[in-house]
Length: 214
Image (cartoon, rainbow, N blue to C red; front, side):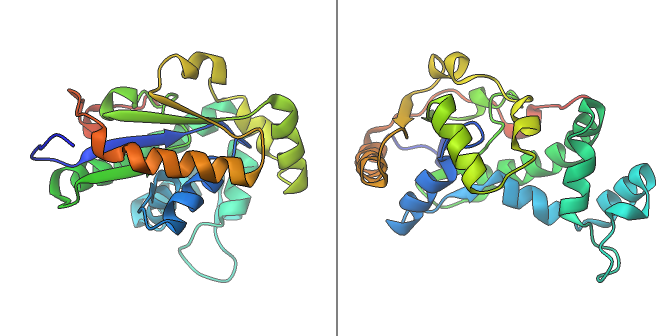
């Protein structure tokens, strides 16, 4: 691995139902730390300014009935995926906060490398912020079977905001085929881990330089 003043930045992405989280779970089981953009975003749902903005836009229905000042994530999800404008509004609120956290990690972490799981990596125009990109893919048929098995009724609506695998494949450094068994996926995870030390740095753009329009 080339030496640098910052960690090597690796982004893992994949469309809904592709199994990217399962792939990341396999990495973590092998002792590889993976930072999840969705988890960073969820933490910011507790920020007072975010709670205030969401309750002003959607009313008390998005507030947790049992814990004052907390957003009910399920209630919010049912509302925002109905209208593209609401998805943009949520992104406008959360993305700058998430990107700033990611930038702070990139600037301050003592680790040799940082791996981020970012579901909407390309949709948020973050591809130039990473040294190396990994895309987890599967066929549409398998994706539908997985989504049905986990009872994700809102998945198809969320999928409409994602760029197709075909467009993404040409822009990544490694494609993980998740059409077969978990053993096959685990084999690919081991191969990826073994190659991390040989990944080279690129000229990247800061995460905080990205702007999500309202």
